Image (cartoon, rainbow, N blue to C red; front, top):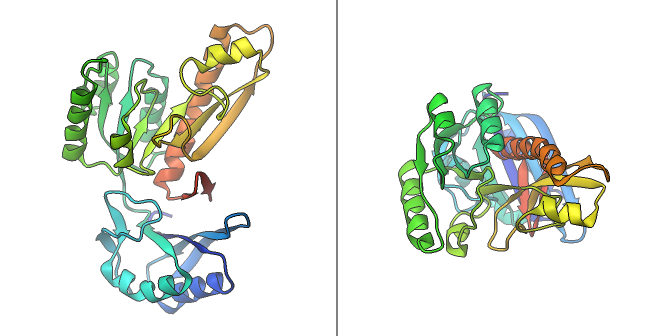
Length: 301
């Protein structure tokens, strides 16, 4: 549904929330297309995703910025008039909320190093229409993938990173972000650790792919760690980046079976197939506003 509105809600779990939300949409002329909800007993939180047809909605919808977002981004979707009408209900139930329009195409920046498999997969899925977003820029610490970016007609910036110039490199990256103003960023096997200051500027807006089934084998060379341990399953994990390495809220994971006959190279080959699929799923779900974060967990509707 290309012209739907999506309302994401997080609040303390209590009676009447679903009825109140449905009634609000109905009273203003909206037609609910999908409604998904989850009550987390441990945290006492209620989480909900409501998608509705705004064709006859009597509150106009357009671009705006709001501090009420469940997962903040540089550009939110909605309207101050919607906020004015919805805020009494949100205050009553202590809701954090985010309104999005499916017609809005968020802007993405991709970070990559030398490994190109995740980058190529994202670009193919974007070209085929599977990822409904715009790719503003590719940033890399190596020139190796310039030809791929040129083929897809996407700007490519090389920002070399060494032990000696990390601060200057990150400042250059920040200037590129300020120029292109992405809604979110994707680390498609970007083999550099971003500073805490950088990461904290973009909560729930940086998606990473880690080549292991987290929390197992964090950090560098996870396939080698898995081989040394003699595991029978290897995996890949896509998660939001936080200041704790490989510890952010997990969006998607998958696994594949390996055996004693597999070498490290076999594990790497099998793992690359997983990495592509897991990352693309996470990016698509983020673009479609299906991910709600609470604590260090996610609900994906």
